[in-house]
Length: 297
Image 1: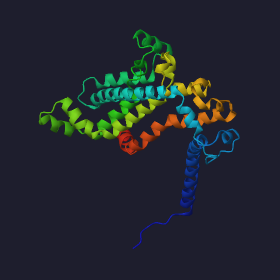
Image 2: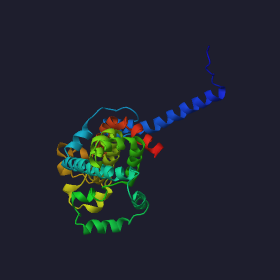
Image 3: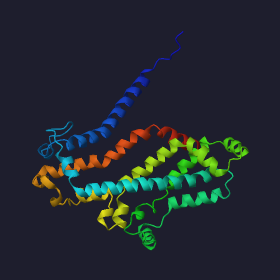
């Protein structure tokens, strides 16, 4: 016996409207990405004349060739990778060490520590006090100026704490303790292996944050050899400060109108590439890592 209830006319109209709305939303997000990629693979004349709107016109790799001949790009890439890898490692370690005790019911003073964490999330000293603090710590114009001040995100601590509370039951801790397991062994041998989704998620959050950040470098760094990629891109895109002497054979083409626009599109693709490559590997953890913890937190 077929018990399926048919959709009413209103339901069908609602479904069609949903499809139309979601399709428009996808197009509005996808089209700029496709356009930037197509423009970066087109000729300078095609970009300057506005003939690119969906697919590459007069296919060319001149933009990428010119970028990779600019030596500061490689310096920025190396620095950004350092800030991302070292900074994310520090971030994840501190986040786990803060979130795990806060997730334990038997942690004495948990409410006070949680209040202090949340208070710093709501209120902070501002730019000048932070700068003076970094200066007094002797971190100005050093790599640690971009890592130590951002070593912990309270938002990520709360997400991780919620995940621990919802996925690590107290019964598991009691069983481990009966077998003679102390807190450190329980954390490293049981909690962390079960927490791969949340570790992947917060690692991506921190890594993307480090990769895209430039304001801290703009404030704290003076030595150009320490600049991250985003700061170098900012100089190129906003201040148009590409050194023609470092452009090699492309110097003559740099005077053409379209090359500058072509460089902008190529730089956007080059700077986004590491994040685009890493994202598919951790995307599958998002539902587990964020949604479960947030719903039961």
